[in-house]
Image (cartoon, rainbow, N blue to C red; front, side, top):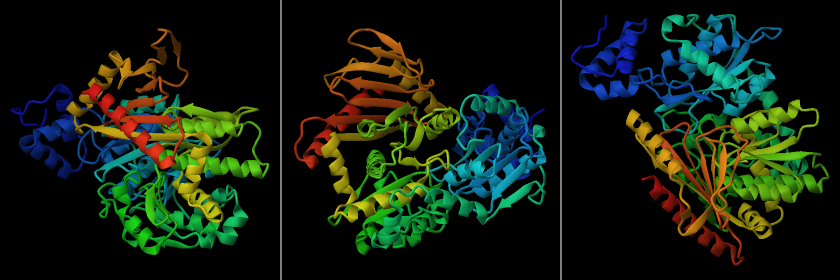
Length: 591
């Protein structure tokens, strides 16, 4: 029997999920809201209950609210029980299974972390729960440091305030990858209702340990070992004038301490953004990729006439940089930051005769080809992986297990995420902030800014330019269907030319096939299957398109290289115009 009014008609799946919640042992306030929405906002009921929030290959992410398709304490509990059931199928370590839990500044993040801890403890699994908010890379490190079977980070990274997420890490500290991702997903899907979830009532369980400062200290010590010019940093670090903003997020807990421990003590904090706040009141979006998000920091940079401004996103795994170049505040994009760091690392290790044997760097397929050009110029191998830092971590772990594996030093992706060292297995804006300060200090001592060094890179390796655009869709059933139709249209009818430039080849990562249009030949792709299309044009340009894994949008990336050398600003302008035209042409093909 159902409490749902019979005159409201929903599809079978929606009705089934609504009935389950109205009959389940959940709070009466939630049930009252469901009943009210059935009468007054049936479309919201459909959007909230038409499916179960998908536990994807990285975990959960979605809008917070009531319903099976929303982030709330009930979907969190069910997901955690699924993870527990998967862990139970694996041999227990000497001291039993344990899970490290962290959370960011978002609304409900602490609450969701506590709900997760209570389910784990209810299943006799030991928990290490952070006492307060901490960065995502810290949780990856903590998982390894405490020898846990898994870790969970409650975060939606830089998504809008109404979102939250639940990221799962395996014992190696990396986000779950095959076979664990599919194994956990299968177990989560088996949790049909809340009666299948075991939980303790509060955090007083002896199985729940609150993490103290010893992990903070171990983390800072671990990242300190990767400084390339430690003496220069300690002796001259105070001469670098740095502005920093945590954008209301977790970075404030560790980034200033990390910079100071490396020698960078001349730090101005953007105070208006230093207090954690899940509503992100001073920005439209807490995304350091967007210049508008960085406005307060840029104003402080200009007022203080500082050397650079660093901003980390809410969970401090991504970092944005603005440089004071001859009095002008110039923002670096994610590809430029990656290449500046890589060039600095290669130069330092080469000059110090410390370049490891079988050294390797890793980038994602969406990241600039300049990254690979730099690495290979210094005799290093460079590997491409699918978009997502978990694939970089997977390769790192593979090499560590091989008797003569490659020596990982640095990896990066165009979306402002980087990792120097092997202390963690996720992108780390804390160590990246320190590394960028070191690059800037090393440049400043030679009378240069980071822009000067970037131009130096262009002079040596050629001018590369990249741009990303989004096609946004509604957060609804129809929105998701539109995204699927758009990708299918392009996959079924790929362009043979764009702006009159012949398309040389298409790489379809869903079918694992590369097709050469000129010859009609094809070959297999070796990377895992993914909903990604990549087009290589005859002029060397690259266009890549994929649906976002976390938001209702399709992402289109474009990369071009300018061969004919002239003044670098002129070349950059020409490249920018070309990428804009290419992106518009591909966007038109989707509509």
